[in-house]
Figure (cartoon, rainbow, N blue to C red):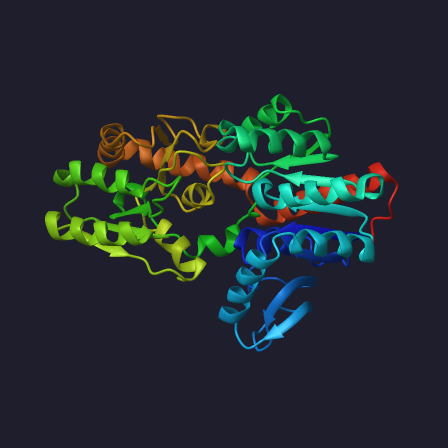
Length: 399
């Protein structure tokens, strides 16, 4: 079976999804939805079509690069940006040509605003000769962007034209139907793959969660992230934070500065986790944390939230992120409004003073993770997604 994936080539989420199917012997091709000349190092067993790429970069196992080699990733990225300005329709023409050349059995777009819109434009051009199309909804693709008229129209066109749909949340299944989905829903499962629970167990601190003295804060503050609200809430709880370390990861520049100010003002140790820190180290920090805070005005199923559950850290999560489909609010986690520092502070106080709640949550959340997040289970579900398509279309489910 030949699969053409249209997705962000430098995304860890793309790499993790492809890793689940890379050992099946299928002929997998990746076309970047955003032409940037970059490729995530975890890609393997795949053919990638870039306009420009760094000729000296090391690539994963059995990765074939197509495009024009240049001296460095920086030059590749800069050249693709210039080309986009000079020839804005270049990427679409490349995709249409590629579809005609390789004739995939299935096209799978991961994410809607870049990959889905681009695929939709290619389908308009190719019309009846377009292959079956799976659309995967990432994060806020419908939940947030439906609010903007210029996006709503495109979202409706994508959903009404695709043959299959996958997502992370039952919330988004309902939204997809509301916004015109006519195709078949293949799965509802985490997009970033599962967690190797055996490996993760070795990174998890032994003993009760209530004995831990680390607080994790996801450090995004942008159009969606609200880490500064989290810091403001923590400042309101300073009377309870003696002996704790605040660990801030995935940090935006403004949050890094605010974290340093927070430490200076409160005297509470605040550790800014550098970008590029190995994933195992982040998991280990969740495994040493009493609670993990993630705030955003819009999200799908937050990967950091799932990692907190797996590592025994009590999750405090904004109620915009499908967390209610995994935890019971007030018992196995706390759901909060992302832009209300008072409500977030109240949740933090609750989690810092109720040992029984956080210890019980750690046990129950781990049972949930065992049933729904184990990497072997989700790898099987990912491969079965394509097998279901192949059976539906009468395609031989093999290389």
